[in-house]
Image (cartoon, rainbow, N blue to C red; front, side, top):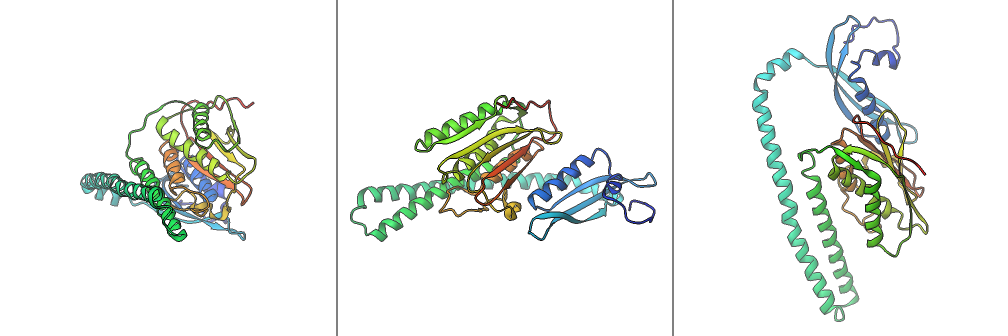
Length: 335
């Protein structure tokens, strides 16, 4: 495929030398993220062979765990893309694109309609449970009151879940705005709201001043709110909770992190962390829709960035997000 002479084993950097320079940063970013998160990936690349011939290849890869069960290696395939076959298939591509766009629009309508349809009955169930609790609490048995409380909790969870789906479903389709966003101010407002909603807790919060980026303010608010809400939630069992929101000098792109001293999680499960409806902690222990990190991931992906986490069980967690290539960076001033 590379027309390279069979002179022995090639080093990684010799192999990467065949990759088009414009495609190489994206390839390295995908590979690094895959090893961090444990998730498989695929992409198309342009290569220039040893004989100077340009080709297109399709790469698929999946991380392999080491002796401790953590992803450290990548295993995959490189397949040559037949340009002639693609050109031949192009005659019907416009029709196929129209069909796919129509299917996506239908799915978006469906994805929005279902949560709306579910929201009303869930609110009705919750309302009747509240009325029963108020009017019949004293005549119910202890078991009856337990069941009633379980119904109310389940209805509240279902309501939160439908609201999260209403946020997640259209995210891939909505138009992007690019504006200057003050992440420090945004984070402070989210923390202020959390303090008002939970006045019984004291949480030590440090927000680096002067953090700015360029992106869609609504999507970035969803990203920040879900990460900060998680840090607030998973530090609830700590007598002295701490949350640190700051920028980092990591690589060529803007990188920020939300760090907490909460319950953390086992990094062996990090590959599932951003999948919808995946929980690393029981719903009875920590409430939530199970979609918060999926929403955060979609928000940062829309900006061409990536998100990952580092944690330990009982040792807190740090969530990083990189904005990807973009405008001039402003990382703020640490104090």
